[in-house]
Length: 130
Image (cartoon, rainbow, N blue to C red):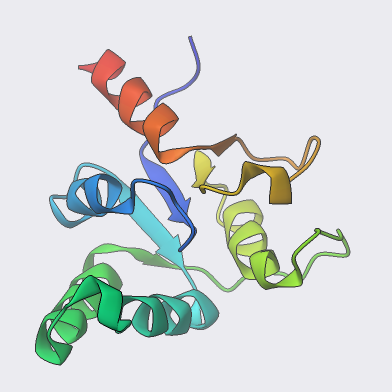
């Protein structure tokens, strides 16, 4: 059995982000972030398809920032198929995250020094810990 998941980096391409975000907001897991990731969360949450009010987006971001862990990420020389994924990997590695949660695991090939898990895999592992 893998180690307990307590601290994660959540990529905005996570396939089942609502359930994982709910766990983060409930304090079940702690999200690690830097300013680049917060900016991306703000941009993604403000997209019309989510239908979130601007004030609600602001509140979610404030709670993530207050309850999460800001990481001064070290830059990596690793190359990924999508360079926009680098901030997530850099924060995960620097912050020693238990997992990087993403719906695009193919963008994180090979052994990178952090478990790359789908949202479903994280939810299943957390269920197994209870």
